[in-house]
Length: 348
Image (cartoon, rainbow, N blue to C red):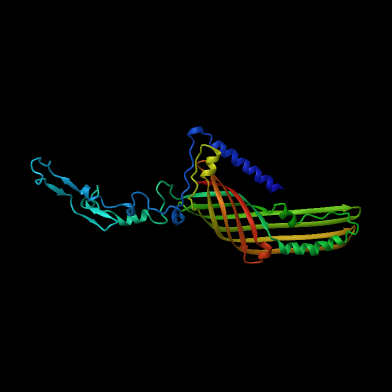
C-alpha cells in the first residue's frame, strides 16, 4: 500500500507541476500534430510525395515555353516572330532547364555529399533540437513470479506453524505478501542521450534493500519469522519513438501537455545481483522447539521489452511512465516479472 500511496502522490505532483507550467492562458503553446518520423514513415497512411518533391514536379506546359518576340501585325498574320526558350532536358519525371544548370549564388556547384548527410537516416530533422544528454530519477515496482519462493515457504513455513497447536499466532508477512501488496519497489538513477528525433539510449543503476520482522509472543511461547533482501541491478536500453520525442515546453492546458507527450518502445539488457535470507524460530522459553533458515545469492541476466509514454512538464523536465516485461535466463519461474517504472527526466 505504501507504493500505491507514493505513486498517487507522484502523479498528483506531476499534475500540479504541469498545470503550473501551462498556466499561460490563450498564449500557451499548442501541441504539434503527430507524424511518423525516421524509418517509421513507411507506415504512414498517406504515402504520396510531399509538394515540391522530385516525384511531383512535371515539365512546364509547352505553351509556357513559347512567347511572342514582337506584336503580331494586323495586316500580316504570317509575319509573327516566335521564339522558344533555351532547350531543356526531360525524362518524363524531371525537367531540367538551362538556367537550372547555372552556378549557385555563392559560385559553388551543389554539394551532393552535404545533401545526402542532411537527409540521411540518423541526421537531425529540420527544426528539431540537436542531440542532448538527460538524467532520469525514478522508481520501479516489480511483480515478480516468485514461484520457487512460494513453494519453499509453503513447505518450510508450514512446518513452523504446525508447532503452534492451538493456533494462537497469526501468519507472518512474507515476500509473497509484499508481492500482492505491490511493495517490491526499487529506486534507480540513469543517464541517457538523444541521438535522433526518434532514438535515445539509456544507462541506469538501481537498488532496493528491505526486510520484514515478525515477532509474536504468547505466555512463554515465541514465534519469530524474519526476511532480509537486497537487489542491485544495472542495464542499458534503447528507446524508439515512432512519432518523435516529446517537445518540452509550457503548453496552453494540461490536455495540451498530454497531447505533446509521445509513446515509445523500449528494449535492452540488464544484469543484477540478489541477496536474500529468511529464518524462523519457535520456542517455549528457554527451549527452542523448531528453527530453520535459508540464504539465496544469485546473479541475474535478463532481457526486457516494453512500452512507455513521455509527457513534457516544462522546458527542462518531463515525466516518464513505462511498463516492461523482464525475461531472465536463470531461474525464469522465480525471477521473470512485469515492471512498472515512473521517473522524472531532466534535460541538460
